Length: 99
Image (cartoon, rainbow, N blue to C red; front, side, top):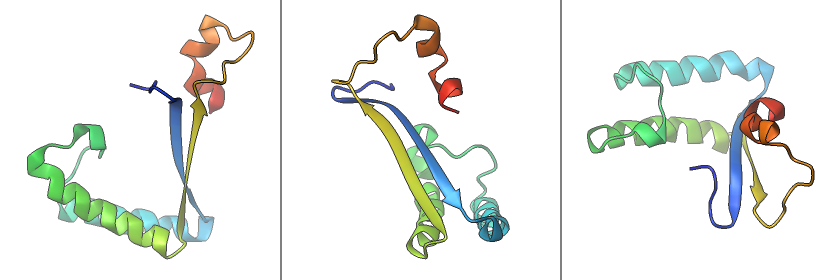
């Protein structure tokens, strides 16, 4: 669901300096492999059996945030702000237009 009661259209991103990118990727991929997580990691796909593995992986990611190697940004809209002249096509293609 991308539309909540007060906020909608949630998009997030991770910012990594180019000189740190390879190390971040290497460490996260190694941790995923250690945890036997070989597919896409999404909180919406987590099961009770995999919860501890997801937590272990996200703790490594949070270590990068704490060390100021990764920065997180989340964008969203307030539902009280309704855009003017917004077409149905724009609404259906919102992600690609934002990207």
